[in-house]
Length: 305
Length: 294
Image (cartoon, rainbow over all chains, first blue to last red; front, side, top):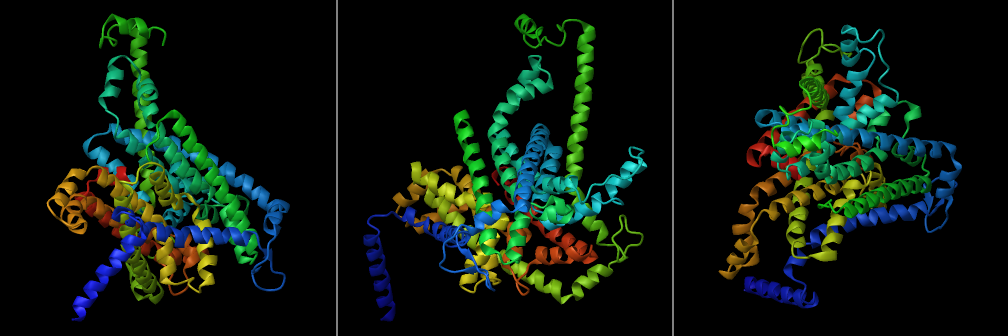
């Protein structure tokens, strides 16, 4: 009895739902989980962050005064010389890290693409393994490796390349190397995935026609790799602009990034300023991302980003 | 460069012999050889650079002293024992597993349904869904972490498993979505239509026709979601608490004080899990697809 009732109820509910949705097809209903998820976990929290950035800072206790509107958070950012220095340094750092990651990543992806059989598998496995290793492990190992008594310095000293050990941690070099660990696997894979669509015999044809390897790469491979390089570059820039772990563990206080500063402000309970800085950082990243997509569209080489 | 057009006109494939003079041709090949050699050395260095962390944590985890030395003077498994004895680390391991399983389920379901739903959308709507789906991947982790911290804090949900799973899914869902989408693009939609014409319900058509054909894609999506959750760190640092922190967060906290040998042990175990996942993944899906689709 109750079974029949439930079944009937379900049928009725379903028909009501279908009527209410006004002919929205079942396929569109499939989008509901993702949209709901993004709305609750991404759009709403980001909106709330934006709202907090426009609230007044609380004077005594508490992180902010609810329901107030003010630009104090943004004012604090432009007044603070620390924040502006940190911001400039972070952007410069992100650009350098992106260029290095795209350059090295493209070379590596090209090598993996040209290699065959076991070599290709090994080269790709190295990237996938590195991508799937947690940030903390990579940055921690980089610290062990790069310290004055670390492997890199020991090797170079023993080989007679150096007279005294290089300072590779607690400075820009350390942060840069650490950040490359974070983004390089993604730039390699972004370029590799577009190269798989290119016919390898084209390169051989170019070689047969007398092009040097460098020229063959420049005129045949590179134009095809550009969309992958752009996608990799966008990822590298977004993540380097938001670099957090590498600067904290491999840098000194002069290599503080925006992300580190956001956390500082949060821990000082200056919520409006922290939120404002996060909003500004996100805006810069998204503007760069949009520019990247527009440039790519103009070249007519857009796959799905 | 200027001598090349005539040679090309002379005869295809004859460039090597018909180079201007034997000497310049020889030096050109010498340069090419050196270039090739340098290129290989460069790629080898990058490869070593990528894998060095894994080797380092594996070797140092078997050291015997309190201070990390490389290579260790004596080998022992004492840090593995202290890992097994530590309730803090066991708790973190359990938290990591809970977060990873939750993320896998959430990200795979949301990613797969969306990949199926977005196919027939077309035009602007499809672009909008794709953009929204991928966008969280490009917002800095610290920003996402702080937004979740303040937002979930309003509902008293910060530092819960739910918060950690939500944060991890923010990155795992777009990846699962694009992997399943790539896999669906290789699936012939006429097969599904045939099933529908033969009277199967849409659900039955998915279970019996679509799913078996994109099985490897679904598997890869779940695997990637699992691994993303295991390794995520920045957002977790913000949204987790003492009772819910995962292995990377506890490792980070231990490292802020000193280089703790137990971190090497934990890292090695994490890497082993990932190796296992990559091996299983490449057996099922093929390494090249795993590398190209993510």
